[in-house]
Length: 360
Ligand SMILES: C[S@@+](CC[C@H](N)C(=O)[O-])C[C@H]1O[C@@H](n2cnc3c(N)ncnc32)[C@H](O)[C@@H]1O
Ligand code: SF4
Image (cartoon, rainbow, N blue to C red):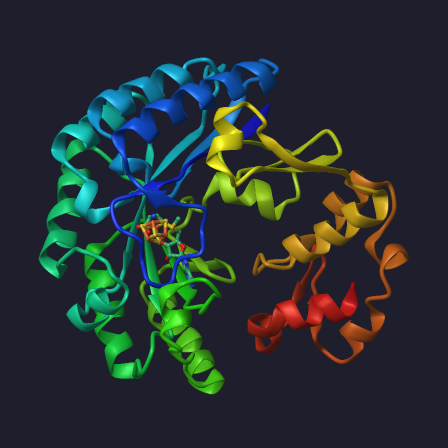
């Protein structure tokens, strides 16, 4: 059984913070791209059953109905007989009744919707195009069509944002009553409009306070904080993203997609011309045993419950204490453990990247 990620790099507008591999939607480009995608899948896919499928981007929901039909035709190249989770990334303005019905008809059972904020001031700054009312209308429409596993993305630590501003966004996201919420602290990345405009990130302490504020509000409403940036109602954790955090194999198809298969990690090209000329792989590396162990840690500690000690020894044939000198981290309480798991202590989880980089 495998997992599959498919990248659709088109968006109607480009957000001021985004450094994902994306470009403005053009019908000709999208049509040609889908042909190239079909070629790549036909060439690379080995016929395994697919357990989780994730169409991300960019914004896959900007494709028009004909293109979406073509995309589903391509997806039917996979063995979907035991598919458990099928997600598509969407944004509010491109979600229509017709597209949602088409998604449902084609087996999509999870929507991941980019909202980021309900606050007009920030919607404008981020160069997004929805209104708060539209968010409520579209999520309601999706529920009425039968989607009962919906994720919404929220961003915080926006320029000059206050805890009161965040409170407004959290109040609204809770009112949506969706199954899953992803909360990302804004990163101001080079080559984005915010960076070029010299917008400064907010104070680190405030960023941390916001992280804790979100955690408290969501926990109180029975969302389980299961990964640094992710919360879900019980049973609605993202099965696909858990494949990444569990350091398991997956295919990546499409422009800029990454994959991890049979001991090799690869990244596809970010150059559309090369991709369309079927030169899709940009680089491929064999993952050494040492690197495999490092990935296991870096990815595994993103999960709040951490790394399962028995699963670790079953996977690697040795116990975790032998492999890593974690005693020091346990002694100074950066790591904690119970009978089954080793995990980053609550006080350190927000800084877990720093710990892990020092550690590995
Ligand atoms: C590929 S986008 C999601 C789908 C869709 N394109 C959209 O934006 O509505 C993935 C998510 O990453 C988050 N994200 C993107 N760039 C970010 C940044 N620079 N800092 C923090 N979060 C970011 C946003 O929450 C965004 O919804
Ligand atoms: S955040 Fe989403 S909609 Fe905005 S540019 Fe990036 S991929 Fe496109």
